[in-house]
Image (cartoon, rainbow, N blue to C red):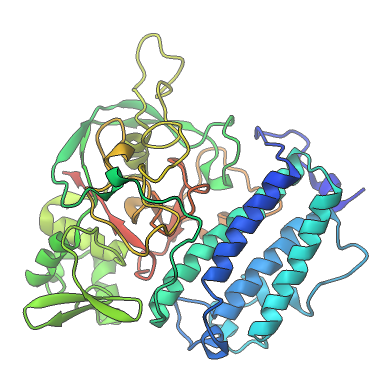
Length: 458
């Protein structure tokens, strides 16, 4: 009996997919191409990098991706039972919980060439297994977990290049071309009204693939609220900066002000004043601030302070998901709370396309908040998927009845309580990963991620 056979759940709670070897191969080749596009132009010194507390060396990040396939796919399938580890001390080097972030800079990691060779070696075993095997539903689940894990780290490499000041990455060469309707420019002011009632929040068991922290849908009672049609723009945030928002302690929570003092933050990350105009560092060059582009590289504390200054508030993640799914509240004749017309994506159930959302790094950087009207949610909110991740007011906690998923036990459970929830994805997020129920989570002081925020009326 293989490890995979021994560890499969006795009672599957998921409606798992069975995907063909050709489909799974395409998924792997697609994400691998993007991963390599993000690092191929970097030299040995750039792969080693300079120590920074908010990022990993490029060579660790790529090696970690390879190790995940080795440990959570090939290892669980029993493919390597007779071969042993594919790299010496791989577990000690690439397991996030075996090697702290600060120690990764001095760890005896392979060179650029050695890391790529390790990745190729792992990939050969994965492809060889697919050529000889027709995956069942559980094996498909393991495979998709490994691929989606790489897709998340591919996005991380996108913002690492920004942190290090490397040149902007090349655009995704296979991304769908932007539709003309997606190029709408300008601001999108105003709020939409969202009705109160009892709604479902979270993924339903009939969804083909979700992470453990999305399980399972449960009823939430929400009062009516008003939500902004679009995220806060750079021009709107500049008004806060120019009103001495970073100097006014009364606008900040206790934790937020403590962060601001320790970080010596007086401006948004990557901003610079050049005489009368604001500039923003976009990878290795400075560009004029784009007024109608969403505020980006802002942390939870900064979003909270802006809301206090503007007399607004951040939405809870339940409110955010309701505005995205377009569900109708419980009423006579409905089969359950919030079950009617609950959409997979803000625009419906159609697979994300170029007109719907700015995803897949089809262009490098954010577009104006008025772009992609075809992606509006039922209540009229725009860009709830793509462009920028959006901070919510909610701390990251499990849903009722949460169960740790095997084999990726470290996916969510270690982070409950000290992280905050973000929703919606960014321009660098892969379209086959994101959905309305997807929950991202980071500590509230993180400014490096491609994150902004949308607000609600108080």
